[in-house]
Length: 233
Image 1 (cartoon, rainbow, N blue to C red):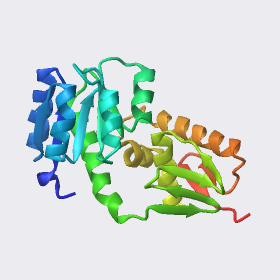
Image 2: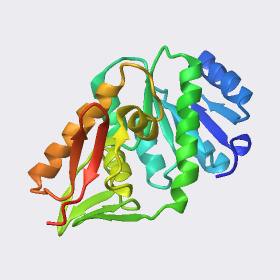
Image 3: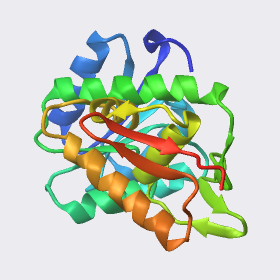
Image 4: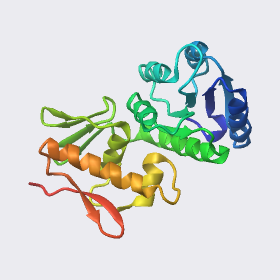
């Protein structure tokens, strides 16, 4: 991807004021923004525009946002921010599981949308230059297949759990503060959100333990954050 000035953003939402709000704030940051209000038209426009970022509402006339997200993921790893009108955990979890990178609950502050868009675009520009297969001990993380393997077994992780483990595995032994992990994995750093990191670390630990994986392990550095430890055993 190019510089932010050349980044294209596709906003898919049937609420005109949401599209215009996103256009106003993102255009100020130098992005090229296009809006689509119908789910049935979104995929065709996606193919024509080839955006660098998609902002996608779950509830749409025609094809719904979750279905669109799955269709986009079949052909592209473009960053996707899902919008939901309800603060429902189920909506958020399903959105992340079908391939969304982040989500926002309406109503949201447009500056938060801009911050998350910038973070996702920054990460997308960096990732193509990074290795697509990471080995940490006997663990393999395959970015192209979005798989975590331990021998012949696979560890099923949700998208943010996968991203968290990937970041730690790229830098074994390095201690990451919770605020760093929140910024690098979720794309934002707001007071009170660090609990999200703790919950996801615990979930990854439980899934590694269920697969009888003890090397590598995620270690807590008390008062600081977390690191991935390789024991060599």
